[in-house]
Image (cartoon, rainbow, N blue to C red; front, side, top):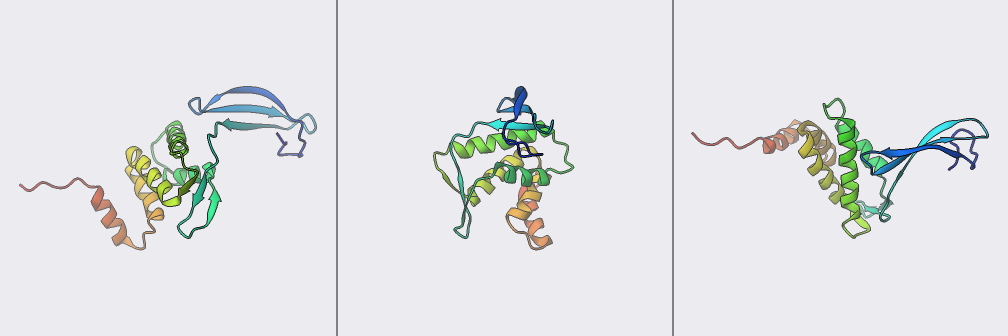
Amino acid sequence: MRCPFCGNVDTQVKDSRPAEDNVAIRRRRFCPACSGRFTTYERVQLRDLVVVKSNGKREDFDRDKMARSIRIAMQKRAVEPDRIEQMISGIVRRLESTGETDIPSKAIGEIVMEALSRIDNVAYVRFASVYKNFQDADDFDKFVSELRPNNLPE
């Protein structure tokens, strides 16, 4: 592993332990060249996924990019970070287990929205507002009204 401080490729692992509900390994590393210390995370990757955008453009799936968008939607919500990380890992496992290497971005967005809807409705609406490209308050109103349970006639 290359040292992020000096670029030395000969770094040493000082400590390893399970992280993120045992789906990753956290490694504390030391660089003998500059004495820098840093942490890396190692995860199992079943296959290389490619995201197919709606315009046809293709790019490698980036777990961190998806996680950032989820964390932005979850900002200032009363949900534990471990639960968010479990959700992200579950989404990645679900994508990897489809058997497909090319995943449409629309499918990823739908899976993320489904997962968010089970954890926090506010985060779900926040994510949906970007994913579905809400343009004005009416878009929010229509979306939120679909979340509310139907009122039964008296």
